[in-house]
Amino acid sequence: MKRVVSCAIFVLALAAYSVPAQATATASFQGNCNSTFTCNFDAARPSPGSSCSGGATILYSWDFGDPAGSQTFTSSTTISHTYPGTGGYTVILKVWCSDGPTQTATHHVCYGFGGPDCITSGGGWQP
Image (tube, rainbow, N blue to C red; front, side, top):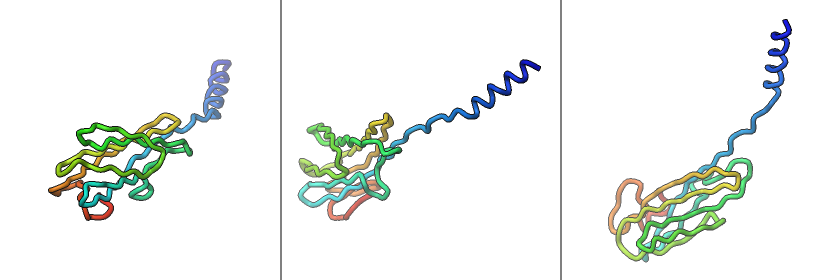
């Protein structure tokens, strides 16, 4: 009887303990490019956009996939980048949340050709 009572108290104590929810990150973006090789990127598109759960602070890391190999960090959802010319470029957005989780989104910028999942000049906000 003593063991049964001890187990029942342990189970009740365990049931009363709440485990905090796991924080989550979401990454998404769209691009809008022009004929002079400049693209605007927006991590708030498409709605609801990139986010961190629980109101955590977000830092955006952008890799534009051009020969310069530059990686840019910003707290703004919008950023512009000028490419060196015709070609295909892989754009990677990494969303960093102050409470730990990260998430990545990838799209392609295509100057001089088109294709699925390509952000092309003159097409408005894509993909």
